[in-house]
Image 1 (cartoon, rainbow, N blue to C red):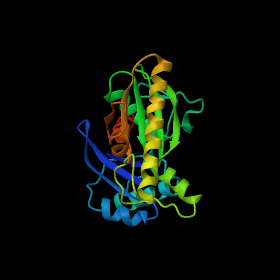
Image 2 (cartoon, helix red, strand yellow; image 1 turned 90 degrees about the horizontal axis):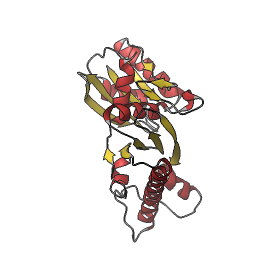
Image 3 (cartoon, one colour; image 1 turned 60 degrees about the vertical axis):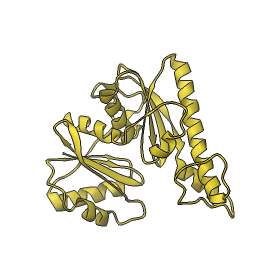
Length: 246
């Protein structure tokens, strides 16, 4: 089965085989020709038995993926939706389908691959934090602007402030405006995540294992005060489990 995590900026995929993930890949789709990117990245893939998608990139993305897989493979993708309960996890949302399907898949992936209570931090276009107890009960979560969104917000409301696109690591003290914007955004995200994890621990009176995923996870992980496990395939792992129940 081909598993697809269609995020706001990038598409990630892998094949589910023998209980694991193989043949993984990724490409950025924002402001690009999605069909052309699919031709380049998926044109030589083996014929999948099915295509299962977690899509948070909107209606156009869903239509483009459907048109492409039907034309290339004669396969209609199945778009996974969040539900009240699945695969041992119970959704905390009053309206379960409004929980982002990427967050839902990550919760299920964490429940099946990590023992005990867990806090999931997904560092993508937005940063999401979700709390999951060991018994599979989702406690809810928070959504914050991601690093790129924080930098864009500052740039849009200032005349001469621009972030560097080349800065990879954040430093406490820097000597250029571009690096200062980048570092400030990273430290804002890190500080918020650390504070939220502290408060979650106090509120629930227990420790949580922290698992971090998403495109900016590597940048944030290096600065977090809390130890965290990096799992870039967490959403795809959950999607594999959800697909197995269909």
